[in-house]
Amino acid sequence: MRRYLTTPIYYVSDVPHLGHAYTTIVADALARFHRMRGEDTRYLTGTDDHGQKIERMAAAHNQAPKQYADGIAAAYQKTWQALHIGNDDFIRTTDPDHEAVVQELWVIWEKNGDVYLGDYEGWYCVNCEQYYTEKELAEGNRCPVHGKPVEKVKERTVFFRLSAYQKRLQSFYDGVLAKTGRPFIEPMIRMNEVRAFVDAGLHDFAASRTNFTWGIPVPGHPGHVIYVWLDALTNYYSATRRQTLKGFWDDDVEIVHLMGKEITRFHAVYWPAMLMSAGLRPPSRIVAHGWWTVDGEKMSKTLGNVVDPNRLAEDVGADAFRYFVLREVPLGADGDFSHEALITRYNAELANDLGNLVNRTLGMVWKYLPDGIVKRPQAIQSPFKMDGKAADHMELAQPSRALEAIWSDVRTGNAYIDQRGPWKQSGDDRIETLWNVLELSRVVGNRVAAFMPERAVKLLAQLGITKAPYWADWGDYQEDYRVQRPEALFPRIDEDKKKALLAKWAPKATNAPAPPPAPESNTVEYSDFAKLDLRVGQIVSAERIPKKDKLLKLTIDIGEKRQVVAGIAESYTPESLLGRKVIFVANLKPAKIGGVLSEGMILAAGEGSALSLSALDKDCAPGTRVK
Image (cartoon, rainbow, N blue to C red):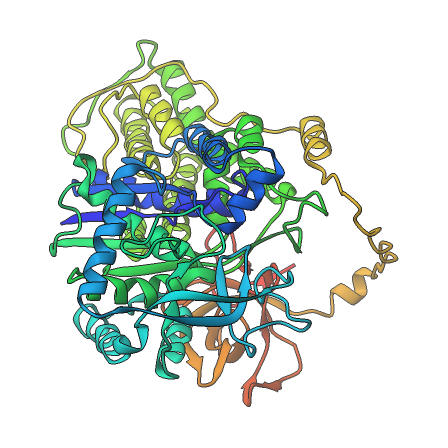
């Protein structure tokens, strides 16, 4: 299969931050995964250079709009290089070949009767370059997204006849679901929002502007420039007219657009209608992710908490930053970024789990086999029960779930070393143990290359492997291992370095209000804690509760079956929970939640949609007491 993955093209109103980096890293991990599976995959990102806001910002900086856009676009390209982004092309809406395609499509739309001249009066947000109705505005005539005042606009404009495409869009959405078993937009909550918008009735929208000039001229309408969203959306198609991506809008290509949830309407309504009008195919799927907050607060220059991906890549390594954002939150849910959580996950999962697996194995090889060669046993059989679902999760655009599966294998490898004890073995038994762990490390090293490309290559090099990473399977390496001396993949961040980093990363507020006083300590006696009956529980069934978007009904095995209602539906799908071990409060008084009886509680960390379930680092039987 051929695949074409895109990020939104980022507006050049400011340099890249955490939100931009997240979308781009996710798309990069998916593109690398599909390439490693041998699929012809292309990946596009870029910048949106036009619009009234850019014209105003350039003037405020005493620059021409193109000069201003050039500087910001360069910052994006530099950041993506620092984060090991492997895009095939970088498009800008000021590229002459893109502008030509936009005008070409406009002529087709006009020929087909889908654009017409008229008068428009309405509310406009310069920040998101979008018109809003009175009903959509926040209190005080403010943008519902940015919270900033909107402007009343009245002008002669050219309209796009979106109203003509309501039934075709509805049929298209139904067709995608019927053909693939998956909605056109994932997660389903975003599809439901867009479907409700379309079902309520579509209205034609203003497709040109006359009160500024920084845009693509409208063919045949002097003084008009093409509305920035029509210009920007066309980039996905115009890029496929270039040699690097030529043919990747063909019918046999799976075209997937990744983006933040706030712009799904443009991509799922405007864009397919524009393509249908031009006689072109719509994309295959849209994957929408949630928003990131920072320590529970919206990112803001005023608060000084905007996360700079360049700084984190420099301080902890690009791959460690990539791993954290990919692993921290399921794609589609909102996430909360914490610098302390970054360090905690770095030490626990990168330094301790993966780093320790490779480092101590290589150390034992050199201790017991001074030539660094571990011969492949004549008959091999995996001693591990490996989690084989990582590829399935990536096919469903769920990198967090994929990493969870891979890390299950990492922990299996460490447990195997502890159980077998190569330091107690000798001869063929020791060689077999070391080879098995090296083989597991090789499989893991290849697979994590989709997520951490630079560290994965270093890991494989320490195993004596210089072949380009691919989606490896157990036992498909036919050679002896000729390993290098161990070198820490992820040096542990000690307490002194942690304090220094957190001080360096501390928000620098600008006219921000003083934080609320810290709450008083609320300690408890051990006798109070001992009243809790905490047990290991295993989830044996999970289902959604009708009309309760945040709630799931679970059956938990704690030696007996209990029914529980948990507010985790924004972070976990029912099928992803089956078989999971969790920590369960068994003596909580039963209560009805959402009209359903709940006989206990499972423990989780985080807030809102950025939840992470409690877990155990070793297998324990359901009902085991936690103390």
